[in-house]
Amino acid sequence: MKLRLAFLFLAVLALAAYPAFAQDVCQRPGNQLVNCGFETGDFTGWTQWGDTSFTFVDGNPYSGNYAAWFGEVNGQGGVYQNVGATNENIYYVSFWLQNLYGGDNFMTVYWNGYDVGPDLYNAPAFGYEHLYGWLSGYPCAGCNTIQFAFYQPPSYWNFDSAFVGSPEPTTLLLVGTGIVGLATRMRKRL
Image (cartoon, rainbow, N blue to C red; front, side):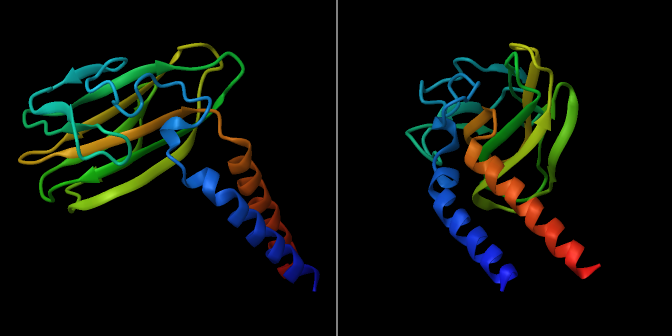
């Protein structure tokens, strides 16, 4: 009976938190990225690197009016920003990604120079997908670098609604509650 009540509690908690989790992550408080949804219509706040051929900001967004388009053909290219806050060492990273064409392509994320994935190679075409995770970083202002790398001949990746900042309390509560629930269930099985 107690186990059923615990699972019911988790289900209610998840449903209550879903609207906050599903909202446009770019607009959440605490986002340390400038121009996270490219709503300026350009790369303001971002630094472009590598092959910037066929790279621009235009329509076809996940949300808002604009998205970044990456169609590099002469090697990797992309964008990066320096982020960080004085009292944070865990960062929630989230973005929306769409691949317009399958075949020879590549996409990944670098955090402070290290490849942290998702390492998409020769990915098939897909509509907007929400990619997210937690990363450990330095607790100082602007001392972490988030870099997005792309390669996509003969088409484009669409990138939109990026977020780097503190995990919101609802997300932490869900993750923590899930871990406690799993630990309790595992303990009862042993």
